[in-house]
Length: 278
View 1: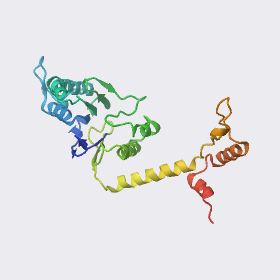
View 2: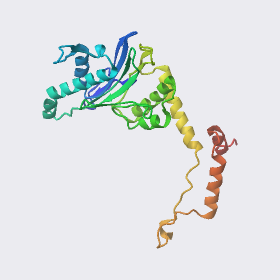
View 3: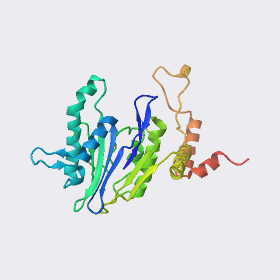
């Protein structure tokens, strides 16, 4: 699970707050809760879950750390979200602020299986499955295509971490609302403990190298792909029957031959062919 730390209330009011919260009782349970959306709402929800919510039927103080199953723990997150909505939503609306919050909640209770949920602002939730091997909240449109292309249910845990960092970097390159530091948590099935709890700070060597390698790989990949063999005739020569996009015979043949020559050829070889030594 990965979460950035940037929050903003306008271009000139940017702050850093932790959005990834960890709950651990080694050997008994381990849980991670990441938030997106309105910071005041998410912090209130986390505080309620830490201090406990009294069950009106049993009188029990229900916390994340005493939930008997991950499903019941996810229900408690949803209940806390609804409680905050009931108390704060109207005041936020009067201030022209949306009640916007969502959570990723994952972990494992001893004797149960590892589970991951995405919890919405209404308090309802869905669960990650083998067909949908990852879940994402917050600003996701820039990084999601990378996850869609690269992540499968069988992806190695630390390969998945690498792909997720590439996805996060892509989001940060295109959206100023997401930024360093980045918090990471790795939880391995049946370990019942946090395997990795790490914060990536600006200038961190591995992440800096990853960003540079990914940018270079993208440049090499697009150079290696043949240019599109499409062209249109000048406007003054377009026949009255419509636009003819067929290339002149010689140009079409040249482009087709170039596509055949470069298809499947390593990027370095294509670059060498396109830029011969003089």
